[in-house]
Image (cartoon, rainbow, N blue to C red; front, side, top):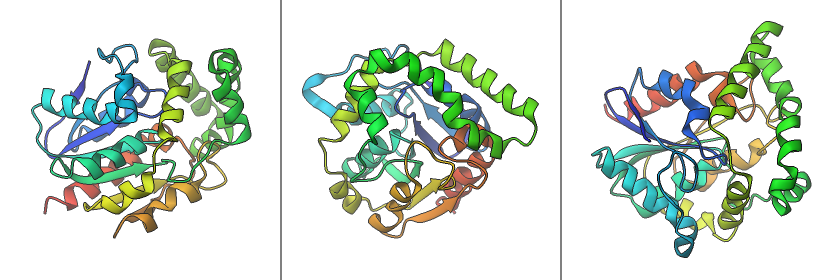
Length: 260
């Protein structure tokens, strides 16, 4: 099932490691008031309608985005990758230069990124550690949620809404672990060198992102020619969720600037 709303310049938004566009729904809807927004669930996830092709490896995600754009009858779009989705967006921009007008990388790991010790343990036994991963997520995210929402009620409301979205669109731990292993087999530095379109790099604050070091994401501004960097303060890794309006303003402003 595709998310396809709005009018104007087309932005294809690629979800993060959990693979579900529904997790980003508030930001997608805000962005869709300014652009035509297309999003989807990654291969293998419930709702994607597509099984992964093991023989294609990571590049199966490149083929999937071709299919998504074809289904939406879109020849060329801005491609926006959220977190792990940034690897897919980068790869697509490097390999499908005729279909990408601009690139946005939000809180995305850069070439050379490696899981930290805690993340490595989860990768080794994703199904075993999944319950603990879910149960401890609010504690890991609490500092940036506290920074983004001054009132306690707003913080609790955010967790309740996001928890409901996650429950309705569950992640698949084994598939998530496989995605990281596939990405680590590639040299994304070569892809950075091949990107020729305007690029926007977005992060939260260094001390609030507990998932991907901001220094890793920010390195894209050096690796990709003429890339522009924007910092979203009062948030960390999940600014697309805690500040959807601001994220939509940043991305839509960048996208519309490419059409003037």
